[in-house]
Image (cartoon, rainbow, N blue to C red):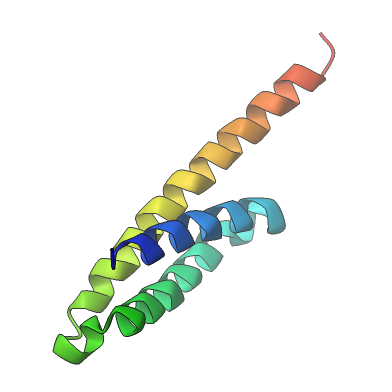
Length: 87
């Protein structure tokens, strides 16, 4: 149950970055958002009280699903563009 937040928030961050930022700023913004999400997720679940080693795990979960969502959004955008343009 504690791993749902970083996964969902990471995917949402990937979709947000895909829609809101230019290609140049997508990866740096996703990295920063993943670190923020990871720290928040570890704090919410109480894992920080046990060990700081849980933060990188949550950061990687958020970043992994953020990259997946970003890639899928970019594929969707490319496919939609190809469908719209005339032959």
